[in-house]
Length: 587
Ligand code: DGT
Ligand code: CA
Ligand code: CA
Ligand code: ZN
Image 1 (cartoon, rainbow, N blue to C red):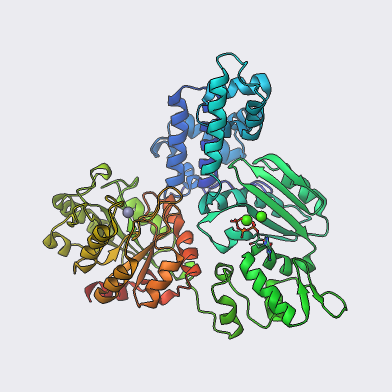
Image 2: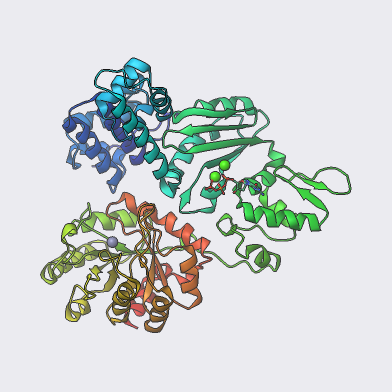
């Protein structure tokens, strides 16, 4: 017996994947919260969203087997909603809620001092449906007269808004990418759009993003502009013109769109990708060649017609060099390299064969070892290492030597089950304790396939102390990899005060690899330190540190960070075939 094939998707209907459905449920939870629904109901939607996002298989396939209710957190009600979505492409309940409550109200809830009741009060009495509207009303003294409010609570709200603005001046790359894609995708579907790209710092892969820059090629900009300023996530239009507009999105980011004719698209894309410093260098080169260069064209200094270029390749070719990948455009010597035709080969996502750092339900992960293995295999990997936390990290349910031994049986069983083309190894993410001791004795480490050592505690110790702890781990012969070496969290926590020269020297000497942790919260090592490490011959790994299936998809953020650091595939251990990786572990 075969399961029914999934329903064909109607033409013109958005393809609903796990992620889209999860997002819809997440929005429902937000909206229910604004409505002041009981917390259990809100949490039920959040739990369902999380389960669907982390599901290692396409929810459509599970639905086809009639097994939706086997999914954690999915009961009868949720299963019905998913079925409705998959069969009709719509969800009545969601449409009701979104017509009843403006999306901007969800942001208003993020202001400290504003709960669901107050948000509804402000909306019903003053029509406030966004943070800017709330701020205007508060500053005009319009909130203090409302029931239950006063001058004091009004001041608190202004302070809350200011605090929020301070926290959100730059946005983490994953959140920025999602907002940019949501703004751009509907525009790419319009018949008037010839092509379009995300530009700016997001295209260059900076870990945090200021505003979003979108570029579109078209001869008929009007309907595209119209759709842009009326986008679902737009809370406010900041400026609107025929070919250039700016809006504020629900996530607090400004988003700029420019529309150019396709024959000028290449020049414009180079300009709006930046960086500004890279552009200034290009402009000087153009000047040396007898042109003034702006965002639209090369203009001969001695008169004559403008030169227009439809592609970036032509722009760089006119300046005498090959196309430069956006990740390198930071004025760190990339133009000189390009002029000499010496741009390095950069690692690409297709080069990655393995993920060497992930968690399971044995510690603080959300999925079993088997589910993680299937999820990784589905994403095209050919080997993984399960690296749950070690015992002293009690909050994460860290493993004792006994539990590590028990876990080994399960890992070996899953490995056998996966067949000869996929491998599951046992590792550990071992704590480097605050007192400098390693969390597991050498005889236990010797039994493991891979040992990652990480700092999670005592990160604010003074330089000599915290550096000594890391060096002690690097020098232990059983330690293969240092996880997220500098310990930063984006945007909240600065890196530990480590003597990186000493760290690199020890890693080079002992052959210990350093991780580029691909979690957008970490991106650690960063681009600059990854480059320094590679220059010293240190091996790198790019790992997701996934605690769920969805987090395995963070790999691109690690890749882009490595590319910014001019890292090639050979420098990164998890691009190697399995046999070669095993040989490295033994050496
Ligand atoms: P961000 O938004 O702070 O994360 O960084 P970017 O790089 O996205 O900067 P943004 O949004 O101010 O400008 C987008 C691009 O436009 C920038 O990367 C290069 C170009 N651009 C902006 N202002 C200037 C300028 O004054 N001169 C030149 N040559 N290019 C500029
Ligand atoms: Ca920008
Ligand atoms: Ca901008
Ligand atoms: Zn981890």
